[in-house]
Length: 158
Ligand SMILES: [Zn+2]
Figure (cartoon, rainbow, N blue to C red):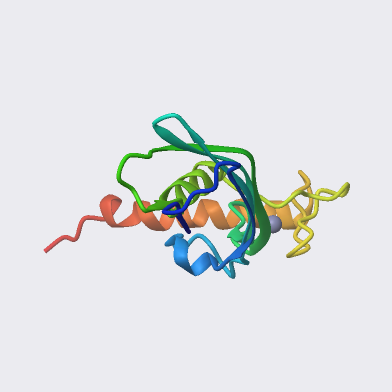
């Protein structure tokens, strides 16, 4: 997102709108079906700098770390702030800052919120201890761990 500051009004600029998420180079293996970046920024000249403050949000889908299904997720930055040296610039480019703030706002392990029965609202799988699905889930994990272990524990004999 670029802001033309060649004829910058003394009273500053208020910008509000939507920008396509495609312009932000968000990693496509993490961000499924991103919606537009919705923003409301205030741009002011403060001495030798331009100051951009405001907020933006973006909605998309992330893979749930528990069941791997895409779940709706949103990032909302309410206190965006960036400054740019004013001398000799014609454009302020916010793209990199918006991208960085979005990536930093992601959780390490996004996961669906289980309902009161401890079921995933997307897949319907129950993660309640003692339930069949929970036991199946752990059994699968155990087998996967064993599968990975086998090649080393069974050296081929000639
Ligand atoms: Zn889930």
